[in-house]
Length: 299
Image 1 (cartoon, rainbow, N blue to C red):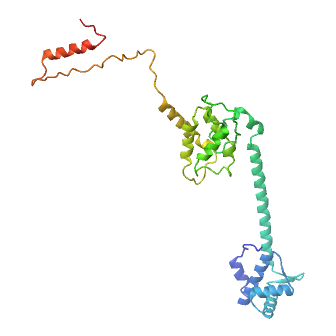
Image 2: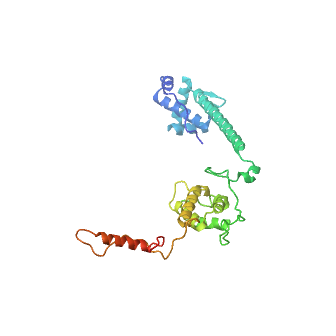
C-alpha cells in the first residue's frame, strides 16, 4: 500500500531542478514518487526499467536516455544495483520515524488509560456491599444490579408481579425512546432501581407504567439506556397520585355536623313595599331565624 503523501518543498525543488529540462524534471518527479511508494530504492534492472517506462509513459529507449541524463546531472545515483535519490530516501526515513513515534505515543496513552480505569474501578467487595446500594444516584451510568425477585411488596398486595415480571412488562410498554435490550442487556438484568420504586410505595400500574410509556413514546437521538433516568418522574408521579387519591379526615376535636339541622337562610319577605320592609316584618323575620337555631332557646 502506497503512502498518502510525502513532503515536498516547492522552492527547494524549483532551485534544485532549474538546470533540468521539463522532461528530465518530470522523470525525476516520477522517480521520487516511486521511491516513496516503495519505501525503498528502485531496482536498476529490466523490471525496474519497465516500471519506470510505464510511469513516465515513454518508450524504453526514451526512459534510458532520461535516466542517463539524471545520472550525469547528479540527481540520482546507482548503488548496489538500485536507483537512489537522496532526498526521497531521506523523506522515507523521516516518515518511518514519525510513524514509530506516533505508535509509541499511542501505546503510552493506552497504558495510561488502562491504569486510570484500574484506579477508578470499584472493587467487587464494594459492589456487593449493601451500604453502597444507592451509590448510583445522580450517575448517568450506574453500576448494574441483578434482579432480586425476593423484594417485599410495598403495600402488602400479593397480586403485585415479581421484579423480573415487572421488568418484562416495562420493556413491552416502552416505546422507541428506550434502547434496544439486545444491545443494552442492563435494561433486562438490572432491576434494582425499579425495585426501589416499588419499595418506596410507587404503584406499578398507576405510577410507573404510564411514566415509562410517556417518556419513551418518541424516538431519541440517544436512546435511554438505564432505568435510573426515570427516577425523578416516577417519584413525582407517585406523589401527585397519592395527593389526588387522599381523602381528608375530620379532626377528633371537631364535632360532626347535625344532619337534621337546616341551613340558616337570610330573611326574604314574600311581600315588598315600595318604600322597603316595615320594621314589624323585619323583626318577625329575625325571630323566625332564631327559633330555627337549636342553640337559641325559644319561649
